[in-house]
Each structure stands twice: as structure tokens, then as C-alpha cells.
Image (cartoon, rainbow, N blue to C red; front, top):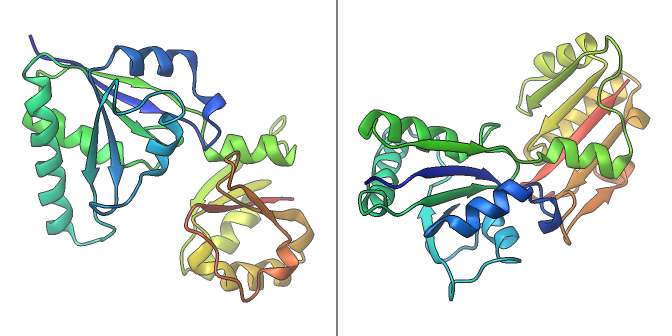
Length: 233
């Protein structure tokens, strides 16, 4: 009998934001797999799960996913990691693949799942949704994301001034993800639109490393990768 693959969102950082169902599936799984960048690094999702499970009671499986846009390298890694997980599934073991936030929102699990479905279509896959950093930021800032007929956009920040400006113009609220690499551009845009005071920037929201930044001081700062900005008009 083939084991089940669980795609489990473990939340934005605070271990207490893990859902009851996510905890139950993690407890039932024989293996907890987590994405990581290099062989020696510790996954953010793994740090959240560490609050409840240890390698003494669960087999912990780190899967290396390189930070690159090279399609050939990525395809090779997707295939390699799927084959690794398949060795457990074919033995009837259940594998829980954990990701920070939600497994189907800008997550490594999306590509992993698609590759698994192509290579091993008989594998049963169950998704356990998680609380995203977007929801976590709204809660910590006590900032409503959308009300009534208002619209909201989720926008992976990129070096495209016009596209980001259009997103702000067309929506009452925009959440820009992974803003560290384009913060100077975003600050320039906010100043032009007179919206600096309507923006908030948060790093590793809800975790013990959380920082809610003073946006006026970010002009020349180097921010961590897991940083987002909420612009609420």
C-alpha cells in the first residue's frame, strides 16, 4: 500500500498558529520533510515544527531546493526530491511535507506536488492549509485587509515600478511579498503617491524574530528575505 503525501502549512512563524489538523497529520506521519536551501541550513518551516517534534521521535527529511531561476537546475531538483520521497511512500510510509504559511500560496510544495502527480499519479495527496504571513501581518498590525466591496492584491515585489504603481492604484490594499530586494524602489513609489504613512513593513511576522519596521528608516537598510509590506489606502 502506498503512503499518503501531506502538504502541510505550518503558519507564518509562531508555533501556536499551527492548526489542530496540521498537528494531527504531523503526528500520524512517519516522515516530516521540509525544504531547505543548502545541505547545512535549517529550514524556517522546520524551526516551527521543532516546537512539537524532534528527530528522536520522527524521521526528519531535509530536501534541498536551490535558490535559482534556472529551469534545468530546478527540474532536476524537483525530480530528485520526488524520487527521495517516493522511496518512503512506496514502503507505505506517510510523508508530511511542511512549508511556512500555506502550501498552495507561493510555496515550494506547489512544484513538488505537480512533479509527484506526473511521475507517480497513484500517490494520494492531502493538503492541510496554513495561516499565511499575510494573515499574520494583518493580525499583528491590527490592519483590516479588505472590507465590504474593497479589493486586495497579493504582489511578489519586483523591479517594475509601473506594475507596482498600478497595483496600488487599482486596489484598496496591496500586500507586497519579499520586498527586501526592491525596497528603495517601493519607498520612492510610496513617496510619489504620498502613501508612506499608509504602509507597514514586517519581517518574519509572528515569530520570535519578528520586526515591525519604522518605514521612514528603511531607505538604506538591508532587510531579511522574509519581509513583506502592506499598503492600505
